[in-house]
Each structure stands twice: as structure tokens, then as C-alpha cells.
Amino acid sequence: MMSDAYPTRLMPQKDGSTAALFGPWVLKSAFQPIFDLRSGKAEIAGFEGLVRPFLSGRGASPATLFRTTQGPDRQLLETVTRDLHMMNAATLPVTNAMLFINLDPSAFSDRLAIAEALASVRKQWAKTGASPRRLVCEITEFKAKSPALLFTLADTIRANGFKLAIDDYGSDESDAERLAKLRPDIVKFDGRWITRLMETKPGYRHIKDMASSFAERGIATVFEGIEQLWQLELSESAGATYVQGY
Image 1 (spheres, one colour):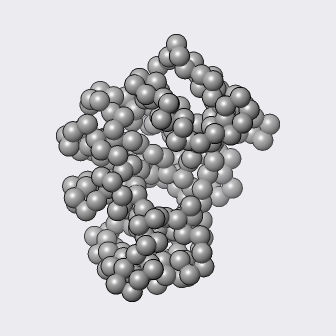
Image 2 (cartoon, one colour):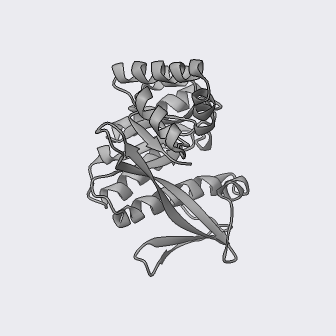
Image 3 (cartoon, one colour):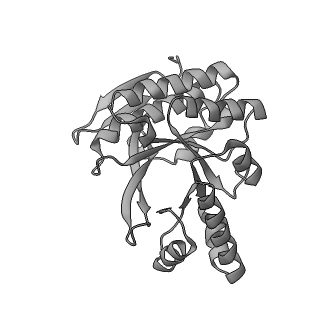
């Protein structure tokens, strides 16, 4: 899939990674570590692939990149960034780590678009030689075009053998109803939401109860936005499976 407005080209980098030319943008991967707390110490269990865009040689906000890229070009951008992260997974310093990539449910207009997107993910991930279970597909907090398409997206992720995560639980459309319907492997708690809850005793009890409830159902939890020692300590005592910084 190509676009006249946004032609794409891969660009090998001196550090062994790959960047992508996307129209006027240069896109690079950044990988944020996700730590496993279950051993009593924080050990890297995975990384989330994040895009870092550059325009005219200067860093720009990812929000600006996605806001100014719409329609078919938005779908192309989603594909390019996912492929880029999977290509660059070989540069990660931890072997057998999970890779988390995002899928925006609002970007899919029909079942065919979902099938094509996941076929592209499957093809690119197969090149790494890694198990499909090491790839975690995060359904972001945005609203799908219809409930049927949301279910199709979740089912297609599972059909390809990938793990399913709900991103930013507690924010926008990522709520208890979505969780109950999609039955994810992993739930990522929105960083701003989880921090507010941690600041009060009732809030802390609430997230502890949620983490326990999810664990009983075989659902792992990721507390996002954890940057302070007190947040890390409360995450561990609340029973979080994983933590991730901002």
C-alpha cells in the first residue's frame, strides 16, 4: 500500500536500527521497558514500541504526526510504525522479551482492513523468528467504528496467535465493559488514572481489588506511568504483574 502524499522508504541507520521515510517525516523506533514484579525485583519482561517522528531534522510530537495524517494515509502510517518496531526488535538488549505494539480500533473501517493489517503484522513478525506469543497487540482506548469491528479486531489478533492487551484502562473507551467483552490476556492501567487512585487509601484498595480480580481470571496487569519509588512500592503491594514508566 503506497500513497502519493506519503511515499515510504526504509533507511538503515548507523546503530543497526532502521528508520522509515514517510512523506516529509522520518520515523524512528523507541522502546520503553516493561518490568515484571513477580520475582520480588523488577526484571525486564518486554518493551513497548513507540514512534519518534522527525520533521526537517527536528523532533516532533507523535500526536502531531497522527493528528495531521488522516484517511488512507493514517492506515498506512499505522502499518509503517508497527512494521518499523518489529524490524527493530532485533536491536533490543533482552532476548525473549515481549514486544507491545498498538492497534487503534478507530482506524479500521471494515473487516477487510483488519484482516490486511493483521496479515501484515503476522508476515513482519514471522521474519523475526520469534513466537507469536511474544507479540502483544494493544487495542488502544479509542472508539471503534462499530462493536462488531471491535470484536473482529480482537478475534483476529487471537487467531494469529498473538497476545491481546487493552491499553489505557480507565481512559476513554477502555472501560470495564470493553474488558468483559474482549477478554484480554493483559490489561494496562492508564497512568494518570492509576496515579490518582494511588494517592488515597480508598483508591489504593480499589486498584488492589482490581488486580486481584484480574489475576483470578488469568489476566495480567500493567500499571503505567510509574516513575516514583512510592508508586513502584504501591504497585508491587497492590499485586501488579508489570509496571511501565511514562
